[in-house]
Image (cartoon, rainbow, N blue to C red):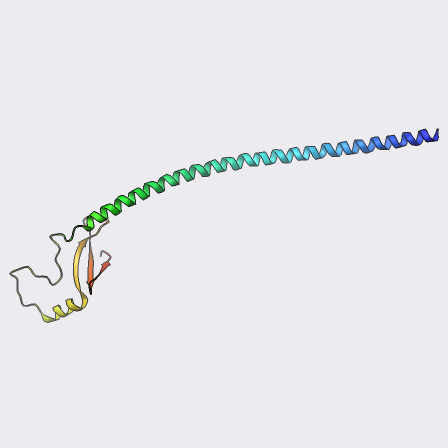
Length: 146
């Protein structure tokens, strides 16, 4: 009888241990499911953010493409504008029209020789505006419009 009681206590203890392990397993399973749900929600949020970022990338890529096309057109136009040597109304400083007085002061001639010639040219980005271009020893220097 003692052996049977001992065996019953061992089986009862094994049953309690099994129940404890089952409860622990259920608790671990629930925690894992909660963590899985949380990660799935985070994944969905990240996918939405990625889609938004991809849409922004597409939008800015299109804007960049348009800007590059506009730049190319502007450069082409600027290149065409540079083909124009001088506007008929442009006059070099110190340049005389034919038939005017030939007696210039010598000081002005020396200043022009040292400083170079000054001329007015069309500003390439704003029609109708003028800017100064100063030629110093065969090197043109662009001066901002006043």
